[in-house]
Structure formats: C-alpha cells, structure tokens
Length: 169
Image (cartoon, rainbow, N blue to C red):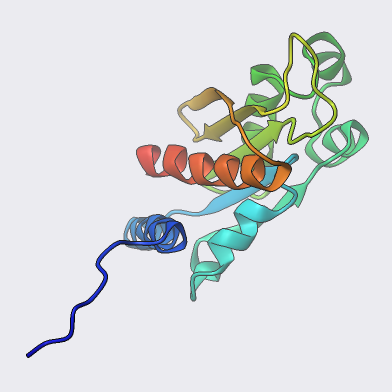
C-alpha cells in the first residue's frame, strides 16, 4: 500500500513552479533579465534568486522606492513623474525600458504601486499597481488593483510580474 499524499499545492509551491518555468525558459533561450522595483522593495528579485542558477539569466536590478532614485538611477524623466505620478503606466514602462537598457538585458521588468495601508487616494487607491515588461521590440504594461494587507499586495504584485514576464518569454 502506498501512503495517501496531499496533492494540493500550496501557494508557495505554485509560485516556485512559476519561477522555475521562467528560469528554464530564459536559460533554454539564452535570454537575460533585469528588474526595477518600487512598491515590492526587492521581493521580485528575491523570488527570482530563490532558484539555483539564477545568475545565468538575472543580471541585476534596482530598488527605486523614491522618486529621486527613479530619476537618478533609472533616468526617468522628472516631467513623467510630475505629470503622471510615480504610480502610472508611463513611469512603469519607462522603468522597464530603462533597466533593460542600463543592464543590457533582453527583458526588463518594472513594478510601481501603492502597497498601503497609507498613500492611496480616490484616483489612485491602495493596491493600484502598474507592472511592465520591456523587450527590444515592445513594452507590455498592465494595471492592477490588488486587495489585502501591505504584504499581500506586494506578494500579488510580484506574482503578477512573474506571470506577465512568462507570457513574453
């Protein structure tokens, strides 16, 4: 007799499968990746580096939490931030394109959002997040409004960034 095994996957295992699939594809296709994170504060890079051998495809990244660091490190236009806000599709796309260009990678992923519980407004509520993936040919950017605690919002943003990346790899 074989013992009964719980076949339900935990959210951790599902996420790990996603990261492993990205790793496998990037390595198979000999492609590289760079990340620019604001509201997730390095969570995306952490999840990517949980996979052994990630240095084969993850070149590096920036945690650009403040507007000043977005401008200084990623060369985001101050006018883009002033006119659209740091949490906007325009800034997310600029972040993804810039990190890809600076680190000379095939893919650039960027996340900017409001993790809460403070910082939201009627027009930009807590949970509002823009995620962009840039290649040399295109930039795909999606808007999300995540629900939950600060940590849940950050986790959901990192997961959606991985899923968006996977759709382009």
